[in-house]
Image (cartoon, rainbow, N blue to C red; front, side, top):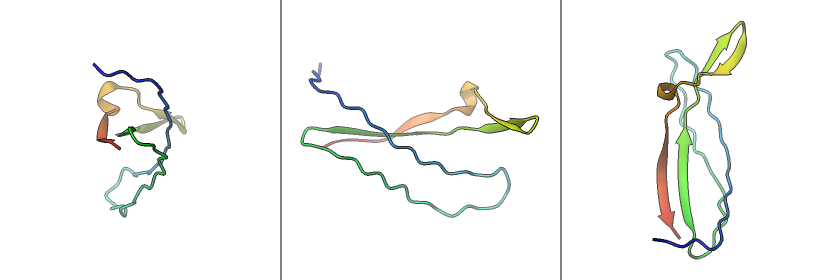
Length: 77
């Protein structure tokens, strides 16, 4: 069991729009500045949001199958 004395949660968001067509989009590097000190655990996660339109207004499709998320990387510094 691990004991966490000080917890500092921070976040940064990047967004990439992928249109629903057959046009390939170029690769994009996402650069995040993460200030750390010795003994830090960094977890990188991502999720996809599917946007639908109803009466010309966008909305997030809020169904479990359409909202995947996952941890991409975790490391101890």
